[in-house]
Amino acid sequence: MWSCSTMDAARLPIDGDPLEHAGQLIAIGRPDEAAHFLRGRVAEGRGSALTRILLVRALLAAGAPAEALEAARENALLNPGISEAILVLGEALMAAAHLPTAIAEFQRALRLDPSSSAARLRLGLAWAEAGEAERALAQFREIDAGDVPDIAAHIARAEAMRTQQRSDAGYVRHLFDQFSADYDARMRGQLGYQAPEILHELAGMVMPGRHDLVALDLGCGTGFAAEAFADMVAAIDGVDLSPAMIAKARARGLYRSLEVADMETSLARGGADYDLMLAADTLVYLGDLAATFRGVGRRLKEHGFFLFTVEMSSAAEFELGPKRRWRHSEGYVRRLAAAAGLDVAGLVAAVPRTEAGVPVEGLAVALSKMQTGTK
Ligand SMILES: C[S@@+](CC[C@H](N)C(=O)[O-])C[C@H]1O[C@@H](n2cnc3c(N)ncnc32)[C@H](O)[C@@H]1O
Image (cartoon, rainbow, N blue to C red; front, side, top):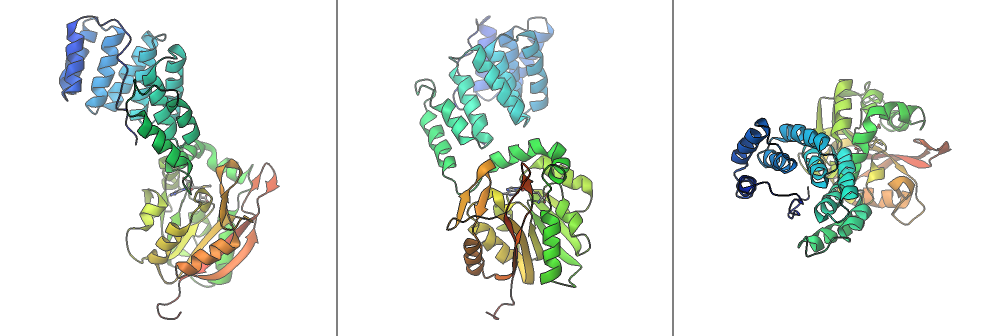
């Protein structure tokens, strides 16, 4: 997570030295004392907007995000026209991991005071956290280096995000955290989603009769693949970037274990412990698949299978398509499989879903790991 190292001085009248003192206590790492003092002032009926803003910052610094959010919400209700009150509400929302609402509050703070570098910086950082490099850059580029000395470093990081050969983890998490509530209904209804069932059919062709398998579902989402493969697996683990999707998967009650993690990172840990690995409509969020294929090659047992869907590209390797989904060419998939020591056991044209009623052309692929020494 990016941090905000600079902050505009609150543009409010300082109502006495005690508040300056509370600000100093926060600055020197004694936020609990500051919070205690500021709570007291609020309780005595001396809770000016600045007092309450400092209280929120003290509580955030003291690691009490829930209390900070409550205090920030109350302050924003009492002082809806004060930019800093709204800004600190955004900060408390960020700390409580409510990214979309935090972004809305930073935008509101900026509307109230368009000259606030603090609000602009926070908004840029929040967009960056959401993986929205262009939006982050648009804010950062408006900020004077006199106000935020390390703005050049923030710009450099956002520019690096733009050139990533995969979707940003923050963007994916944000997208699916928001999508999770009606994911199942929209995917099955509007989008005619069939990837897990297509992969199950492919499994029937390339690995007939296999059952009691130990499986890993990469980008498990809400758990459709665990349902589709229930007849073949003895145990299935899931990994996904989105905590909200993982919560839905957990509620399905089919997984042995679930992990909120990036699949590239997760695959890099552990040994060859899976008979089957699945990635249903997940690799569309990765452009370069080399790290994933390498990880799968390592984590599959001998005679294990990796089944996945991709959207088809006629580019040499991969390209970013509409809706920020990556497409991959058949040649690229075959080359990478060989490089990871995996054989192509099956590769068929498939339509994993539709987009605006139009079938999305894709591939369903089965790779297998041969016995060491047989190649
Ligand atoms: C379209 S959904 C598919 C979910 C599930 N496989 C299914 O069949 O319904 C894509 C899922 O992949 C996850 N995802 C995308 N990139 C990921 C990554 N690098 N690591 C882990 N999960 C990822 C997303 O959070 C999302 O839940």
